[in-house]
Image (cartoon, rainbow, N blue to C red; front, side):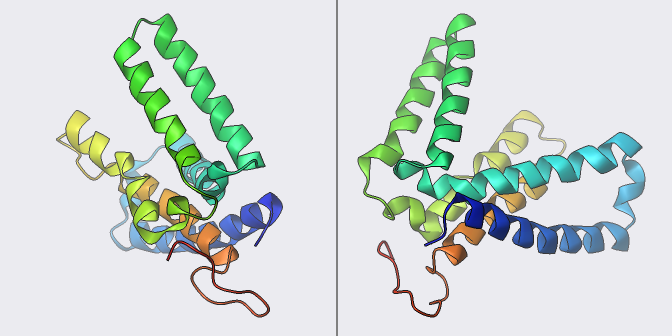
Length: 170
């Protein structure tokens, strides 16, 4: 089982592979030409940040640096929602935030289905909010899944690493 530094390092390596694959895809049809210079820097930076965050996400079910980061983020977003009188959204966020605490460590947050489901708003929201660009969230979803997958790999849940036993939740 890796600590948060190990998970960040793993997510960084996996992101490098993901970014190389994206660069290849974008270079084939020259899609990068539609991006400004700022976007050419901002998109990879945002994807990298997302990959790092989802590299820590599965440990939100236990006392960890990832849990501290996410609950601080959730708190700030919840305060903004309440301040802007969006009480229903704040309530849904609160409900979402307690879900990891209802399971055990290395329970549902360390599964393949969670790896695919938790980042799904990156796929669904662009489809709903910008139907003219339904795949706009695909690179972000990919970065989140790659970060999540790196966590599972680093915990030895995908491939049995030497000297480690396979984790629970599979």
